[in-house]
Structure formats: structure tokens, C-alpha cells
Image (tube, rainbow, N blue to C red; front, side):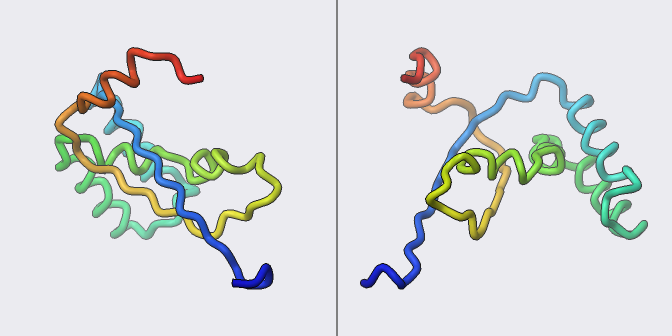
Length: 109
């Protein structure tokens, strides 16, 4: 492989969050969906609002509230790379794994 050929690295980040107030989370997502700047048709707004309201895990709501720029900020300060693709998925979790419990108890550093 020469230096002229593109080299790609995939960064995987796993973050588990606890939903403290499902109603507030869904309300915040619905506000984003209804916001005039949201690039959605009325039919899409209705469909997305129904998805958020029907999802009792909060995953659909959280996905609406995460700003892609915030995710890209993880590598924004690194001049030697250029972000090319970002995929975000939010799914229900059974809670903290044993490994996550241990990491939560220790400071990073």
C-alpha cells in the first residue's frame, strides 16, 4: 500500500445512558421534530412523532436529540484526519455490563 492510497480507520464508541425522565426525553424529541427548521414534510413529522411516542425505551427520542456535530467533535481537533462517514445508532440496553460498572467506578486517565 502506498501513501497515495486512502487509509481508513473506524472509530467505535459505545456509551450507555440511563433515562431519568422518559416524558421529558420524548417531549424534547417531539419539539425537535416539530421545529420549523426540521427538514420534514408534515407526513414525516407525524410519522416520526408517532415513532417517538410509541417507543417506550426512549431510543427513538434520544436519536433525535443527538447532534451529529457533537459526535464529529470527538476527532475535530485532530488535523491529520478527515471524517468521511458517521453512522449513529441508538438501541435499548439491559443496563450496565460488568465491564462498564468497573469503568464507571474508575477515573479515565
